[in-house]
Image (cartoon, rainbow, N blue to C red; front, side):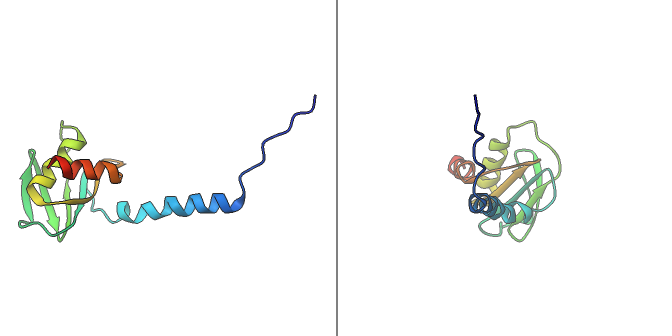
Length: 109
């Protein structure tokens, strides 16, 4: 019996997939350092504030908190949105929130 192997994906499909993945990198790469990092849609009223027992430091619309909270990342994001304004990008450790997670974060605020 002769077995045929599946054909590899065309190069154009691979290139398109890599380009789509690369489009997601700039937002995450632009986030400041810290366990939690966020980019807000506007600069918050205060450059340093506390939200959900985390001290956030902001430079412009980029904010970071270095300590880790026992709270779920979704709750940390929502408390940041309540305190500082609409969140555009959010990272907790190595986890970068996608668009639906950001929408839920802002909706819970």
